[in-house]
Amino acid sequence: MSKDTGKFITLEGGDGSGKSTQSRELAEFIKASGREVLLTREPGGAAGADEIRKLLLTGDPDRWDGAEETLLFYTARLNHLRLTVKPALAKGIWVISDRFADSTMAYQGYGNRLGPENVQKIHDVTVGSFEPDLTCILDLDVYEGLKRTHGRSHDEDRFERMDIEFHERMRKGFQAIAKENSHRCVLLDASGEPGVIQRELRRTVQDRLMS
Ligand code: TMP
Image 1 (cartoon, rainbow, N blue to C red):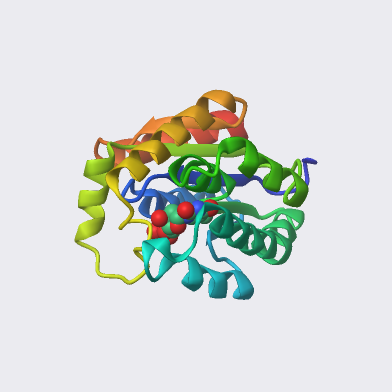
Image 2 (spheres, protein in one colour):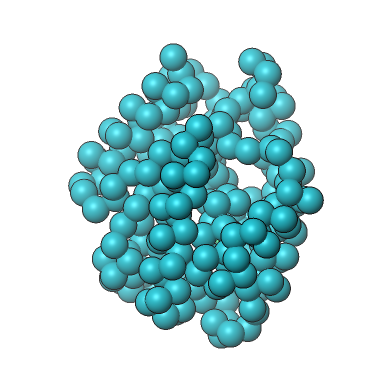
């Protein structure tokens, strides 16, 4: 990406790993450094993508299989990239997305057993070579993560209701993604105090993107 464009940062991790709070605080930090920031999320972040979000996150866990889900996530992703992410980056705005393509690899590729090679093929013909400048993956024990989500009242819990083996496969998927993509990925331990995790995130952004 050229010097004039903004940076694209993605936060990834299992359910209850604290991404959303951490993303908001990271946005404040980047704003305080004098940069313009857009905080967005997937699935969603554009009008059409938000409609697809409802289809994906509500209802019975068996409503879609791995292939069906993946195509819906990628339709939402293309809509989000075209209408929100790429225009912002082109204006020099830094974009933080709470989830992006690594979630499809981990949840559908590994969790829902579509297979990483198949997700990669779909990625290549849709998103292509565009990728985040930095991806921070919050790694957490899946029981701990799911325990944290149980206190929340919301109807977008289709994935939280998948069985524990699904979540274990998804976590291993994120760990494999971090290993295979070390040029852009950092795996952070999300079991500690939120303040400690935020400091680690800020240090990573500073070292990798601001210096
Ligand atoms: P969240 O907004 O609370 O992170 O919920 C989004 C849910 O959707 C979460 O359980 C992970 C799941 N998801 C996928 O399975 N694949 C994807 O590509 C994305 C972006 C999310």
